[in-house]
Length: 287
Length: 149
Image 1 (cartoon, rainbow over the protein chains, first blue to last red):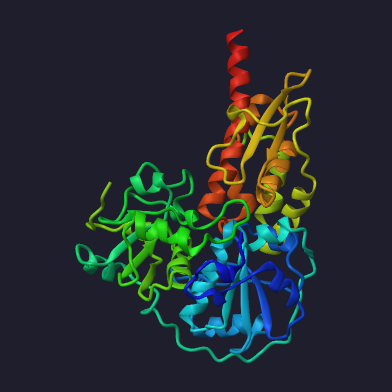
Image 2 (image 1 turned 90 degrees about the horizontal axis):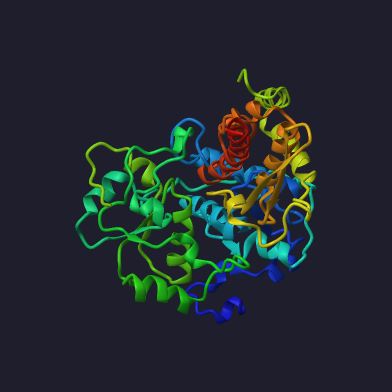
């Protein structure tokens, strides 16, 4: 893949390369954060100096279906030794799917000093770069967070309902089988199960992983992304866009791509996603 | 759980009371012991009938007939980051290989959640259950063939 600066992104500074991270391993103003789907990956070996932010244990409220609150975020940032001036560099497995999810949650609290390592864990490993099992500790900081802003990049079900039939464009980033309703839930695992299959009326199917190169997890170039989202799906930067998946994690990846790599100003993640919509009474469903 | 092999039952009890850190440490130890299917059993490209459906780690399962009528299970995990799949494959091998086929055939797929906890994501849970599903399918196929013989 070409250098990040040559790929035509709207906000190229949001991405850093593996070379850049390797050169900043001991930079005190940088905190490298690994976020994965697979809970075994970080403890089995991670970038030296990297801390883990776990999507289930760290980012979600343990009781309500919601993200951590301001107090929780302040404690999290204190634990990883970050201040408001610290540049957070996220990376993870699955082409940075979970890294962009963590990135999105951090943006709810306005921590804009945030970047993603292009290619994530896969590229770092493929390049034979060092991994360690040593878990670093950093002096606790006092982090004063902004109130969580759920209006700018997040949207809730009732607001999505109101937008149906209007000019808002919905992007369903799940697999084609989930979009069509063929697959609804995982047998014997009701927590994320849904009662109805299909998609929100009017939603376009653009599986999230199309934005990444499978061989090394890097993001596709702006031209390639435009071919998918603009030429194929007819989106444009003036659109009001809602991305959703099953619980809002895969759609964070698409939110990141549209907001930062293509520079769309009005993209929101509907994190209630299909586990909420597909279980809701009397909401319209399309197959 | 009465029909479950004793080896798996013991392992599930160990995991049932483990906290998150203990569970992860144990699983990494299992993953570290992963050995890919030997060449005498299979070589790439691996055949589709051994491919675990819905497993994003590209896992494959084989069942080798042992002289005592039981099965030895072999695995491949093509995704180098498929650590959970490797750990689960080792658990399947160490607790189910050489066990009575009836007991292997009756292993419930949701054992995955006792071992990995409820935090496992939907995608990963489906893949891991798919590995168990193929293991138990091979056991059921052998049982059926013997009953028909």
